[in-house]
Length: 249
Image 1 (cartoon, rainbow, N blue to C red):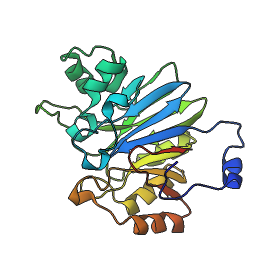
Image 2: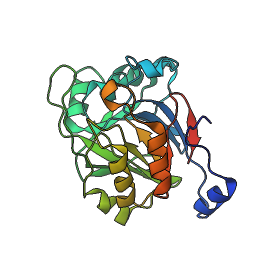
Image 3: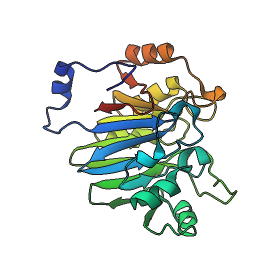
């Protein structure tokens, strides 16, 4: 496992998994794209590999997916979704407008959600939650409202923020759901910076954070050491993975 932030000690892992839950494997593919393995299913989030110069070692043709979850319509979050869905037969999960847009391209295996709503799939439950951002599709079509996802399963729960500002709504997540990890945007300029992401981690009551949406473009390049140090000082673990690397939460 290639993790810039380091790997926790076995003692820490034992304390954090006393509930008897196993580890959850997460693979990072660059930008905001990552996959989580749950109940022998692969959940792929916001696939954008082609066009990401930092993910040149990742081949989108080799990425598995049973479900593709898309937070909003920007091309740097769904650029490879159509091709991966056609190859794998994955179910697309997103807001109504994005699901309809893919349907017009012949990708009908999909499930639409809207804010506050959730659905139980074979691996667990997915809820679509608030994000403060913009959303338009690559052809200029209306992309609906952006969002994030809470995934709940027998193997553990996690939160993906999508692209968002820090929002008070995140407190509701921490009050209702025990999270194994939170996948948060940290790159600033278009989303939260890493200092706001620390506050977000406080709001959702989660110490383990997978950093997303950083370094891909010049406006979102971050100081890795400063981010790691700030998280550590706040009593949290920030995981900055190289594209193609995996970590077990």
